Image 1: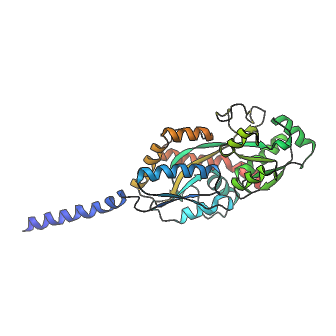
Image 2: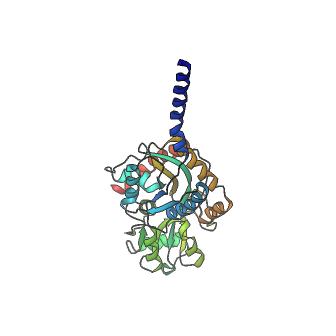
Length: 320
């Protein structure tokens, strides 16, 4: 009788111990949100929508992109930090809310490292200085000469105060001695609409979403912020080639609130890595100018921390 009771108790213990694993293994059981910190149309939004489609197909549940722009990306990042760490709220994380905003706004309501699980590195995009044909220049030296001759005449757009476009534009002015007038927007999409409408003649913006305009001849790329020329704009020089110490990349990844169970993180990371190996995804990334390199989840977390340190002095220079 005693042996029988022990066997029953042991079986109950085993069954109870396996319940959390079985529950977690079922993820996702309902739609998953992917927050995007900018309006539709920017590089973060484009990548989030492509990856959500692949995740929906591979994991059998809908992954829904939710745009939450505002306050240099902190609206979306704050919402992520406050969400339950159950795998049902994710974010297409990027440079601005994690490497720029916490420095520019010391009262930001989250810590970019300790409050998140940075799960999967997606890739990086580079910045370009784009001119409208109405400016009448096709190369960087000619534009700098014009801008220096008439300080403050040329207006430029960025995706917001404290965005990487704003910071690199300020760095550009410091490096070249040109003086430009800043027009901040609430995201890249609205800025590009005004650029195409002739409202603003220049913009510092990520390369991917502007490639169609470059091909149409409605946006003239004067320089890119990559360390070497990029495949999507092979004829466009870098700022470094022109003698200016301007190198910047906007990293993209998928992040979650701190404390997501390990098995959910592994399932998500595996699904994302598989999606990014697909030929159509790789072709689209190449077309957008998104540069990939292998990174583990731990490597991605270390990278986010390193990027925060790298951008801190640049952001502080603009804030002063």
